Structure formats: structure tokens, C-alpha cells
Length: 114
Image 1 (cartoon, rainbow, N blue to C red):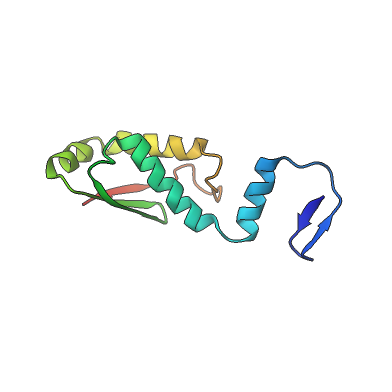
Image 2: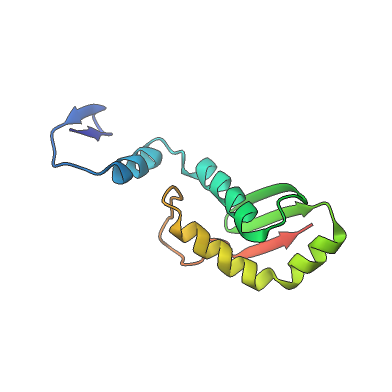
């Protein structure tokens, strides 16, 4: 059985994997934007190594803004910005819960450090 979003009913269909069902549910319930923000913040913590100094991470329309408490760490991250962008995009592309719109290959287009 599979969920039919149009009629709000379950209908018989071929077997569907859980990964496909979860992504379909996220799209149907319009949860992708909030989930994507959360996944991007977790990717920043995993990739940057500066989660200890990170005060806030916001992500919207391909722009990630990170507030860093230490000016020294912020300066070091600034010089590694291109590498961080590449690693963030790779990490989010491998993430099964990140719902991509499929338009761009780059998920994080710009990184702003404050």
C-alpha cells in the first residue's frame, strides 16, 4: 500500500522502499525547507570543525551564514572558505534526508562568516 496524497487514501501498489516513502512524505507535507536548514547546520558542525566556536548557523536559498565567536577562528575559516563550500556540498549531497530540488549541483552557493 502507498499513500495517495490526492485522495488522502491508501492504495495498493508495488512495494516501495522506506527511503522513497520518507522523501515522498517530506515533500507531501512540505517539511523540506525546515529539514534542509537543520541538515545544513549539522553539516557545518561536521565539516568545519568549529562547532565549539559557532554561535548561530542559518541557511536559506543557498546562502549559509555562520556567526563565529572567535575572530581568530573566523579568520582561519575565511581562508578555507572554498574548501569548506566543496566539503559542505559533498556532505549534503550524500545526506539521504536532505531534499534537493534538483536544479543546481551546488547546494551551498555562498558562505558568510560573521
